[in-house]
Image 1 (cartoon, rainbow over the protein chains, first blue to last red):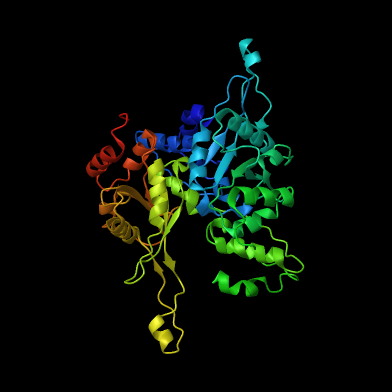
Image 2: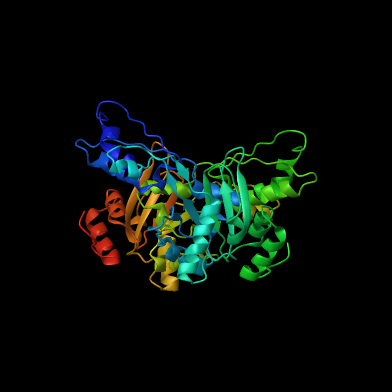
Length: 230
Length: 230
């Protein structure tokens, strides 16, 4: 919506102050950087002040996984029958090969036109949809089946988070197979693939959130080795 | 200080509410994760609620560099005559090889005992010190001279930031050689090494902050190729 309405957002900004509020940190989306560029290129340029804010990119630290051990962040979109973009896989693979954690941000559809209605000339929006940890886990496993490099198969350890920072924040750790079945309730959800360059302190912290501590320990030892006993 | 005072911080937490305020996001430091573990391990466990907050890890998006194109974050400590830890270099190299940006967090010394005084039995604290972008740039170049893998030599493009989020926030882009000379004023400072997997939009945004647009363009083309004209 920002993309298509930036003229409207910036209208009159030469006369009055315009405030633009976003969810998360203002620079976590390229769209907002683009908006700033437009301000700069206006004649005369529109002065802009931005305020940093809390973001899932650091909020995910609530899992106990060290933010220093994260590699690139990737996005997962809703797969459809004929559109299953898997370009994120190569980036995850790069992180995995370095032993780094990967934060996966999950798709949000909040103002999608209903295509069947659109064909009949009516603009009707679909119900908002937010990807769940379970669906993301399923799509990761499906992608692994298509790619086969051993990056995100059902046996890999991940941590799912829901509503980070809210009173009913939830954290669940387990294999992708386990998290494919888990119901983490209302949005927003995110998921982290655990990398092998992981400290015992991180293991200890995350283990508390395991769906099943037995399978967690087994999967951890298989993936990362037993480490020191904590 | 948190490390040595956690017992004191948690004293009476079974009777009264204890609030612990930090600069930045609470999970951007391992120390705070450790504090949470102690709460969990107390008898009985101390319930904890954490609130995410703005952090330089995302605040650095103000440079216009896409947060999706960042790799691991590293730290730079004050080099001394006999202590010049360069372990960050390998992590930066990993990012560089993938074409990713690297955020470098700069050392802060806020409660360091004066060792000469300590030897005479007196505990006197040194004046607080905060590493500047210029000093970090110099240490990066020095590290490159010691390691020689072509990761952070004087010709590499970087972006320095100071006081992100404050009214007098400053952003400066240029080569490490140029930024070794720049005075960005009061703390806190951070620095970003620009990776090659960079979009024209990022180039356009960052270029505005160049110390010298001529050397910036030349360094950019040499490092990343000319890209499309914007």
